[in-house]
Length: 148
Ligand SMILES: *[C@@H]1O[C@H](CO)[C@@H](O)[C@H](O)[C@H]1NC(C)=O
Ligand SMILES: *[C@@H]1O[C@H](CO)[C@@H](O)[C@H](O)[C@H]1NC(C)=O
Ligand SMILES: *[C@@H]1O[C@H](CO)[C@@H](O)[C@H](O)[C@H]1NC(C)=O
Ligand SMILES: *[C@@H]1O[C@H](CO)[C@@H](O)[C@H](O)[C@H]1NC(C)=O
Image 1: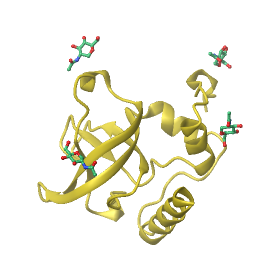
Image 2 (image 1 turned 90 degrees about the vertical axis):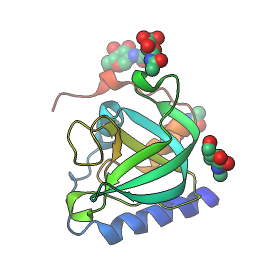
Image 3 (image 1 turned 180 degrees about the horizontal axis):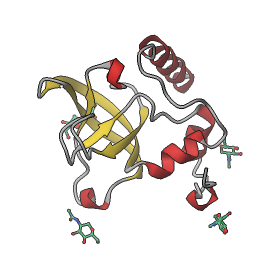
Image 4 (image 1 turned 90 degrees about the horizontal axis):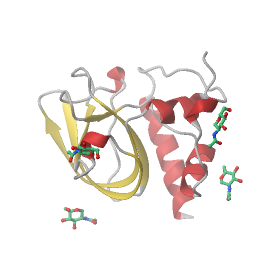
């Protein structure tokens, strides 16, 4: 029930902030592609959000389950992740004290946070069924991605 609530909450959240940022349309491989190209996929809780560097949000997080983590973080998982403050730039704010699955990529540019840190973006979300597969331990096979 709590998980359903979280899903509904996040969906409403995405709807309410997605007007200016347009994500690629739904297709059957969308979540698989996002998962396979992600650097970090984890179930986390956010316990603090601070403005950072003028454009960004800095989220302080705790991990519940880690699905993917860049090897450069193998010793200590990053306790801060970032996004852009502008929803028009596909930045996003995260709710506090809820178990949520986030998809992050190491910032190559200063779009979703400082270079080299983990950034999250509004379009990098996984659909509910995909999240279920992750949670129930289904093996995600990235070689099944079609080259399109
Ligand atoms: C999250 O982690 C911080 C630092 O490791 C810890 O102090 C805090 O108690 C944790 N909060 C929750 C809600 O688990
Ligand atoms: C992470 O693991 C790799 C491979 O085991 C190792 O080479 C690297 O030094 C580790 N990174 C850190 C930050 O410890
Ligand atoms: C895991 O979740 C996926 C997606 O909802 C579902 O297709 C699959 O049957 C589930 N597997 C198990 C073992 O529960
Ligand atoms: C992953 O998918 C590829 C391509 O469909 C397949 O050849 C391979 O056996 C799969 N790997 C596993 C571990 O299921």
